[in-house]
Length: 489
Image 1: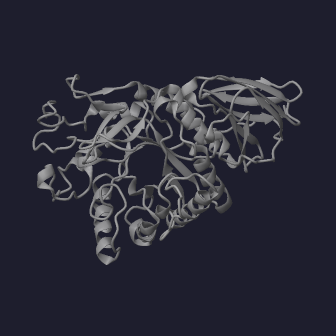
Image 2: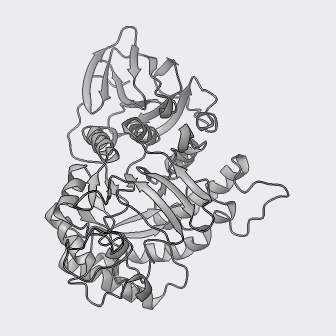
Image 3: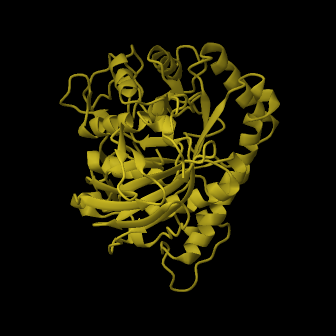
């Protein structure tokens, strides 16, 4: 038990990103002056690389961006889609994007289309020709934007067959040759969540007779663990995306399981984990059959904070939001609400939504205390009052250590257990883990051995509270989380 009240200086912060956006001209490129494109969808979409949009990004608490759509480096030629090969960096959409980011104090992680391919993994060789491309890519961006160019978007959801190539690219980006150009180059990657097809995680996997392609069982968990190890070996970390909020209150059954599997591997092998969370609504269906592909509900403030505090309870070190912008796929019609989106009713062609305001609010809450919880290392989890919600039932949460000796709760509760290796202090993320769709409150009672006070951080505010017989009571709202540090005065 930590003796005396711990005090931590504000010298570190959690990275927050928009994955993806903003786009310049939606589905089609318009050859003209920035910001002057007509808002008529029949003609195209307006430019969104504007002061107003980048001010919104900065105001939301974001620290870095990954360009999408038209703002790749060296785009491929596709006359039918209105795209062309960018022959010069100066004057390109990416150049304009980075000018705006520099002006508003945001970092950028671009992708080179020739190697990475539309911000996603790309198969094929990686040899001297590809190294020369990356060398030129990093050199050019560093020359023009040495502060704004912070890192590289490496890959998005690669299957196991692509991990070998990802590893080779990663090794080169961290080589002395590249470090001589950009010593502090950072890398961003996003790997598959645990609900893809099993052959994505294990090469040559053959389903047993009568097996369901997506079946959440111990076999899936075992195979996915091997995928985590392969990705971490390739990149030195594990970052993945997960969108748990379905229609009509449906919640993914394996959100917590995915977080815990990543957290356990990171703890045992010494690599950090990060996650990209859901900040959009989407109804998607094929144009020809109108058959639904996937449906996600519109997140509100409670949904947003439930995702964030749950992720932090598993020791996540970086958070991304998918998406701050509309995203298009050919052949599929998508109707989305994003934080800043195209809206034909708006003269400017975009507007801030309720999702934007919710993310902005939660980002502010965590940034107020991130310098504290980032000092703590994840040890494991506990869970209380488990309902019939599969998301709560399907992960282990079997941590036994620490000074937290007794705990009760009215509803599903997640407890992330941490320790600060610098001073020995214990920290606990207490999260109202019940499905936020149902708006349930949670009364939690905790008892700590040998503690008579606790620092409690809620909604970014610090409270120094006395404990009676080591007991602390919390009344958590829907999706709310509190970080607790017990100590002896």
